[in-house]
Length: 137
Image 1 (cartoon, rainbow, N blue to C red):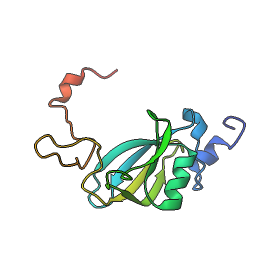
Image 2 (cartoon, one colour):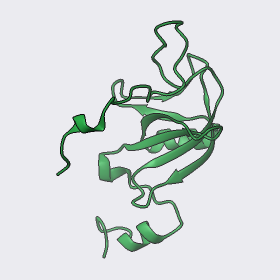
Image 3 (cartoon, rainbow, N blue to C red):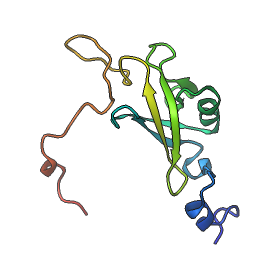
Image 4 (cartoon, helix red, strand yellow):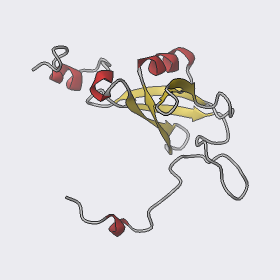
């Protein structure tokens, strides 16, 4: 079976060659960013083909800003660069995992309220009870 008249689905899903499907999600795909130091999930960004190419060329995590409609390399202005150590592609080839070495104080653009330090991860909030989410289904 072919997907969009291109690569057979089983080759895209079962094969070992990256064949990123940017078109599936309108030109951008999600990128989960994880620290190679301690496996902390640092942030979620989005990449288009140009962002992925720049990440591969420079070795630093580059994304497509969905709010500014432009490329941005994390840490260019803050100094909190993320050096890409490995890029993994999910089974559907429509999401990426950047495994990175953080080179600054944090990965989040928000700050700790008590001392103004950069937050290590954008995932700093937690639900106090999963039961508040309600029934699944």
